[in-house]
Length: 114
Image (cartoon, rainbow, N blue to C red; front, side, top):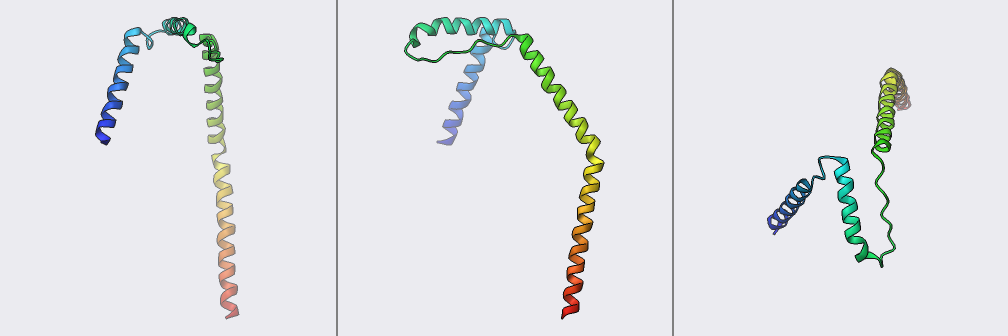
């Protein structure tokens, strides 16, 4: 039963990929926007009862600007992390020394009481 379900999913996804590729959705953002508008104008009369507004696609300049901002934030965060690695290691080593010294002092006082 599982293999039939898996096979059905593979066939459906292959069909979706083929059809979207034939329509040119994956080639150019302008073509994708045209297809979106075609689908919207085709479906709009049929779904008038549904009070759902489909937002406009963002402009490619807005998307590329946002991508640049997020990329730069990632680069800055990575650089800050790498710059602070010695500090993180020092703090971790310091905590380790304190922990080990506490464990050893607890063991030595426990042995003296007995």
